Image (cartoon, rainbow over all chains, first blue to last red; front, side):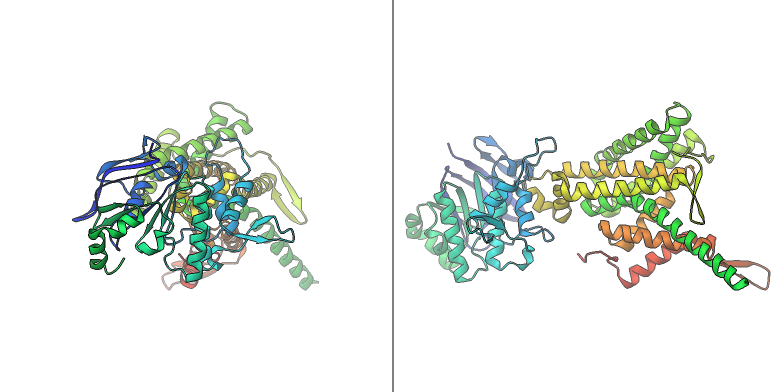
Length: 250
Length: 310
């Protein structure tokens, strides 16, 4: 059974059709690339899945259950997490506290579960540790997120997302604004998450950047799906090549 | 020696000003606490906050006077009623209009006026007195202090410290702080923002219940008593920096001190040719001082002493 299934999703803003009758699915442990030129509706799709925007029509199913009209927090607690293109951290909390808040169980009347191990694990998996004299122990960084470089902020976003224990991770342009070295670091990190069995949907406008990472690609153009398949199939698709040229080389 | 006598008098008055302002300021900080919390977390200026205090005060008075409850039970009832009132106001009204700050201001003000009218209907406009926890007074050096005010001071600080511990140490306190910083970000790590708001309104109500009880036993009860605490809260929160706990406490002490200072400052009487006289400074200017500080701060440092520019 597909982990996430999107059926006939439609969303328009005024006269602009941002997403037009889009259907796709993600299998467990798969990395799906969602690519398309700027303005193709990729981020809107993520906002619809996360319940930040409500679709005009269509349905979204997660693990067979319809989540189309659920509020964001409920979708997160069901097991979907999103990493933003622009880091959405809590500015006055340290890196540690930022990760910790995602690891805290969010029910008033639950047993108090210590969020520390999960916090440290998230920091460790995303390389946000500062190592003490004891080399094997990870201590999450204690500085404010504003002090981190772009790559560090992207790691923080990932750590916060992982802290919620997601079964499905949505990555929105994880390489945008990064230096070459940082792109390598983050793509290495995503590859290691994939190897651990994490299901991921990866949005990018640059097809080359995601080719090596993804199992399957869905190509969007003006809110419509124009192609779907393995990276090789999609690269050979004439319609995609045309959109490539028209879109100024995405 | 007349000079020594004058010096002695000055010291006695200075001591009195310090002691009285330390006591009243703690109560002011408690009065403003719930107000600053609601603003800090939900960006809502709850103009019904003063009315919350009034409901707490009248509940305790009613339980004492008509149900013949002892003071402790009456106090507990006031806190419970105000907690529920906070939750009801949030879910019944604020939640639906929160998106528009102007509508929220008008709606909460209307609530305060509604509560005033209801109290007029049920309890008339007569002034009532709330029995204190402890009667009598004590001497601190050369200053006589009403014992109940020391109790109010202690209770205020205890409530403030417990609140601080909750926000910074407890799991849900951390969740509240996160929501205060970024609501969308909070939802994206799985926090139910509505639940957080419900909790903050409940806590704000409870704090108003405690503050209302002590405020009433400090001054008196009447259907207009909600105005002073609201103005005090407003001034404290603006001066301290909207949403800052530390700022609120510092501002409470600043305003409390100025008020007491004004009470003891000699007044200057200026009379016009037609014998109409005006008084400057002195006890009639008590309420003016906090508002002047408020305006001054808005000019010099609009984000408040400990505020953040957003």
